[in-house]
Length: 244
Image (cartoon, rainbow, N blue to C red; front, side, top):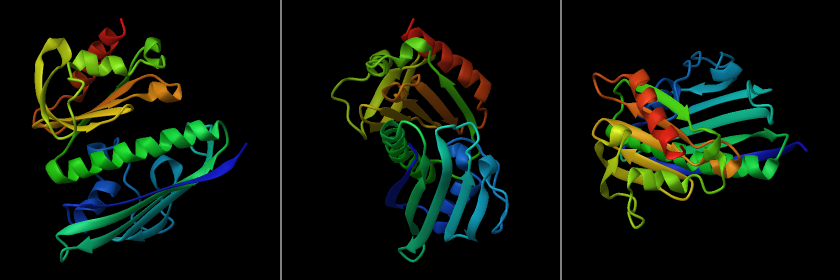
């Protein structure tokens, strides 16, 4: 049954409005995934077949699409960003509104979208604070069928070697691909997601098994010699090994 939804978030970030604008329009690979930049005008073409319905840099950007490509559960999607300066323009306040229509499994779709929003926006703040505007090598991958089990995500923390009492903001040494130690800050942790920030990368772990999908990983690598394909292969082998 079709039903509208709306997810609203507000936050401040240690970045200028111009830096936030650049991230949400051209730098999406740094915190989300790479997208074709929107045409810089109202009525222009936006990502995934959307239309730009508001374009007022660096203050307001809205895109909207009906019949979302590749997402049969959704018939309307709108992303609305409002950006205001704080501290004489040295910082920014952001209001993010994600709205639309889910046509199937509404409660599950809304829960997943809402929780993913919190993680993505946290990653945006990490990117703006620590890495923007550095270019990024982006990789994303999914676990095998076994990673869709109800308790599958708990195995990720174990494979990383994260202590149960490790909380957000602490420095950790985890086991990465090939068992190699990886020094990082645990920048996000809850039952659904884990975020690691290394000296040169943001590594994100997604417990999408909670919504019937495989566990996933994305790697946003800002090192000068970053190799997206090598990251994908290494972390895919690591993730497959977790559920072997």
